[in-house]
Image 1 (cartoon, helix red, strand yellow):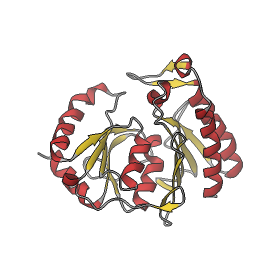
Image 2 (tube, rainbow, N blue to C red; image 1 turned 45 degrees about the horizontal axis):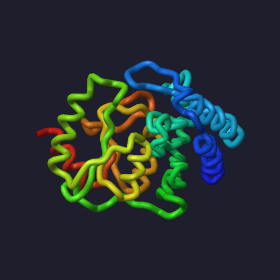
Image 3 (cartoon, rainbow, N blue to C red; image 1 turned 135 degrees about the vertical axis):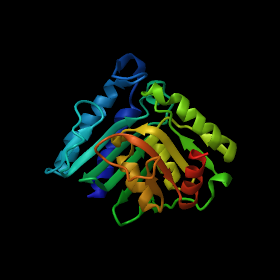
Image 4 (cartoon, one colour; image 1 turned 180 degrees about the horizontal axis):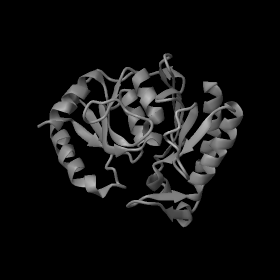
Length: 254
């Protein structure tokens, strides 16, 4: 089943790769700097149609359109193009994120960056993989590593808080990075390239797949206050290896 989902997601990636004049198809959504293109809608529709054939009894939650996150049944939670602003400007760092969830648990996950041909995947209890090769989080401390972050751009009321935290992290680590795709950043931590990804508020379709991938890679996923993530509502998020989560929490409390 996971291989079939991967195949469907890779086919959906062709819609992104063949896109042109992305900025001409923009529609503004609720919130600051929140956009959708016709390609977001096309990718999501393709995924809904093909995944329904693969798992007929599953429901669907997608970023574009009405979302029933409170549905606790077997369902796909999908972000058709995570990193829409990147996509609009042809920055070429955007991902398709697909999670098959049962209640508040992701049981299969795929994050695909079609620009780099990287397929991150996981099945509960069976490890995490990048293009078929098993991946693990790093063993580096945060002080000897790099941090990734998101700015919650649709929630400007969190901007000052985000950059206050970021300054503490910047002073403590080797360096910081921001790709503009939360799903990709979570997977970047999962495969050991960086030690932490954090964001003040993130939606479940941004992290539902990455959550399983990083935990299967030996990492930790929590809210800022140490609680478990939920698939029913947005929250603060921290994805990290075992050492770095402790250091990040200490920085938060300084």
